[in-house]
Image 1 (cartoon, helix red, strand yellow):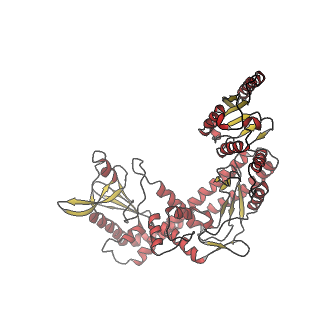
Image 2 (tube, helix red, strand yellow):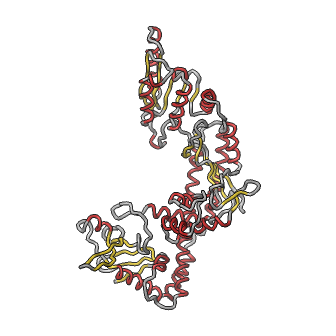
Image 3 (cartoon, one colour):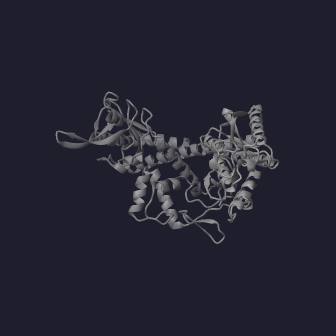
Length: 520
């Protein structure tokens, strides 16, 4: 197995609700002030706090003043009695506040449970609270300590996700040591040393899923096929879900890589984990374990997933991928660009299948007056197109061979090596800057840019390899097909035909190899 390589995907420095750097919006800042009695002395303190925060926030050119939320003559023991406080929380949850400033923890809340509840709630929405007296920001390291102390006071429970444990996980991640629960991870188990190894019988199921998807099967088709023969999923159930299959087809671990820290724990009290969108670092380990699916096949599946997800009509309307018939989702209208679908036509009591433009079916002939074609006529045209290839196979095989030889990008692997070398240099510099507690935003952006560039090249290589395989399939078909076919063959159409475009007087069959045949 190849040596594993760890790529650090640094945390992105964020504060408040997420804002794109390019937009350069000001941070929307609010303050909270409270005094607990109605005495004249406290009233003066209240007015002073409001005036102080108003001026303090407005002085900062990078801040936008939202307001001072205040409660006068109210106890801080229970937040339900504080209208100003509750209004501030509502505004923050509505996305109108990015940052909150208050005098001290005791001014924010005297009840530990209430204080912790709202700090957690704000933190989950990426909204920091800054306590001036304690000089604590709930989103930085000191804030983590604050939450830990408050949590320990609020309830006596084990701190299984304490800072030391978190650091231990991060250290192992940096060494490329992956931590994966394999109990429901179909296709893999662990050896006596805790390393991921392939479970042969389950790996056959994973390979089947990838193969059938690339052959054109829909996720529902694959689901029903697995259930029909009683194959169990990772949880040991014979009932499969579309989401199970989608996760399998998009999990990079099946090609031998591992993206670590996809989610992170917001706090250890409620054990809630959320998707990591850059708040904490991620680690991408290449060749971390033995692959079930070759990288080339995995990337081809990602390409096909994207293609099916972006299927739209000529008017931009989303269309669901269908594979019920070989002609489903591949017959297009030349007038509006929408796909054709199969319907049963009743003509004078006689029913027979026809194919009609979806736009015409749903919106009528005034929107699109594309012709309707009998299924028998459409199938005969496809047979004629395939037979033209067979008739001209000698000439076509020369063209196919030439295309196979030119389809591969010779410099792609060299370019990937260059990117890997550059990424390693940038990461080394990034770690130095991060350890010096300096701003590493530019370096983090460089890493992300290089990763995206590498992914584009890998996808391009997958597309090229896909084209090469399709050409080889056609070449193989022509080598073994000595005679013209006599009837329509669903499996042959699935294998050879990319799409069919219907015009008013004729149609064009586009094969997966890129060859086109017009049938009048």
